[in-house]
Length: 283
Image (cartoon, rainbow, N blue to C red; front, side, top):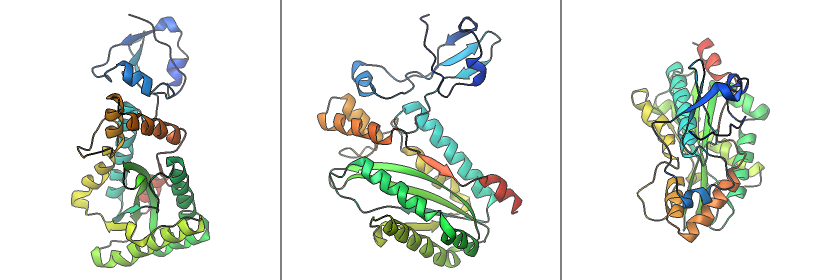
């Protein structure tokens, strides 16, 4: 079997400490179908070609992953599943959870990196300062988690937006949750404005999650992966772009290249500090 070169990125320290002769490669049960077009599309980006596992002489198995949660078909699914699973655990620990979708105004032709930077800047202002501390105390918000979803259309161009989960110690119903939902949306609009960006009131949505159907809300984010296509006309998501780019569509190739460059080094999702511990202690 041909040898492979192991990168130190996202590999267990135990694997790195083993000598090369102590390792062997076991073929995976799944892989990304390789062809010249796919190789060319990923020429400047690390990704998992086949999700191989490195096995030590003692029989211990270690997955070699690139960890790219944006463009790698393998790692995107793994990362988003971990995010969804943690959100589900936090929902089960919280009396109430609010699910928000926050957007910013943008135009067709606007570079993706510009909208991503604006989204991150607005989020930083949203969750920082004395105003945020007072807001959390007023509405008994124990913590939060956010993830970025990214779509594209010819009409509006790149459309990155945030999905946020706010875990509250209050036992809300739809009526009592409405003032908090409105306050969250208003704070987002104000945070964007302080970053010099416009966020239209019609583009924000906050709703109370029903615990009985919470898995639908948590699994919703897992669709934003290069492994899945939207079955819609045009280029709607990462999977659509990748499929069209592999087929040789020039516009899709250019968009995919921009997607890779703009997301390189960007955080895909985040939780507030010590979230699960804080929610457990509040019970």
